[in-house]
Length: 206
Image (cartoon, rainbow, N blue to C red; front, top):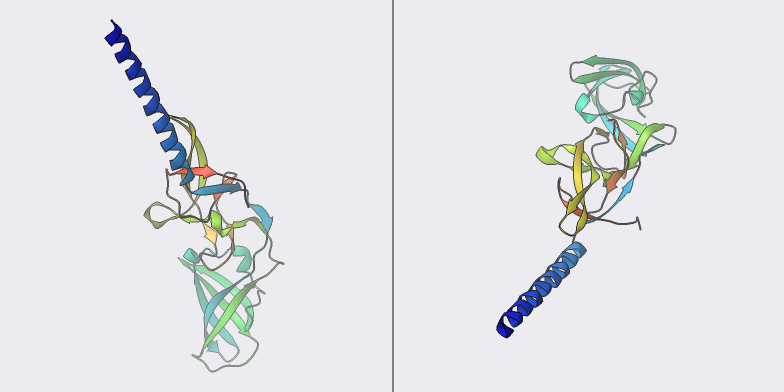
């Protein structure tokens, strides 16, 4: 009987040890999880120059094309828009392209290539602007944002990333982006590379 009590005691002790070890392991693992915080998109503007390659079609006129996959907001593709080398006098949608006809400020040789730029300034206000750190490359290379999904785990609730594909502008080389898709709020922001379904640590923004 005494041996049986000792055995039960050892089993209980071993169980407590395993529980403590597992808890410590989970606690240490949580320290290595990517740190994220959340933000909501705000009305605002961005500073960016979008290049437009133009080919001179007449001495004082040129034509250029912009792909719809560049996600340039239509508010930037309007007649009268200044491209630094001239003003847009016509915008026509042709399948997956926008054809821009530009009245040039200076005369050029027909066939000459001229680079115009859509200069985006504080005067261009958009309804949904957010830091680029909220934009990530998701499954199959698509552009996405992440949301926090609270999920019950073995040691309480965990923060799991859930992805949603979005369209934004510009596609690269800017600190802030214009969201052109419907999004839920708030969105995950992080300086780390993230993946769909990953556990993360929710923190306050520095």
